[in-house]
Length: 144
Image (cartoon, rainbow, N blue to C red):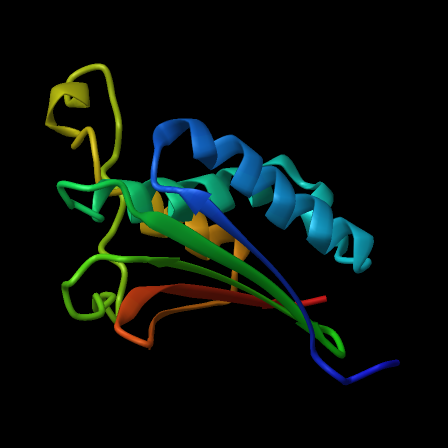
């Protein structure tokens, strides 16, 4: 097993139409590296969620860039998504709040947003904020 990190990267315009090609790049790269989890549909959903978050939270007047990296070292996969926002790195809650119990009587109380981190954490065992050269984002890691 080669433990030397192999990194592939892609820059895409910070536009909604860039999300699917960037997600396909991440998923296809992981598959080519033998990451079986990349064949599960929820894997792509988690990557799309991270890309959507980068797009949504990159509030700039001029079009920016979203930078994607896929790194495989040994039996570890890391996917990083950076945006050009000027904000400091986000922090993630240490303990996930419970999911609301959806029912016919309470469906109106379920928030429309805020489940992205749950989706990402359902696929990736380690999710953390990252910062590099003034750009901020998320690093998602799993072992395979």
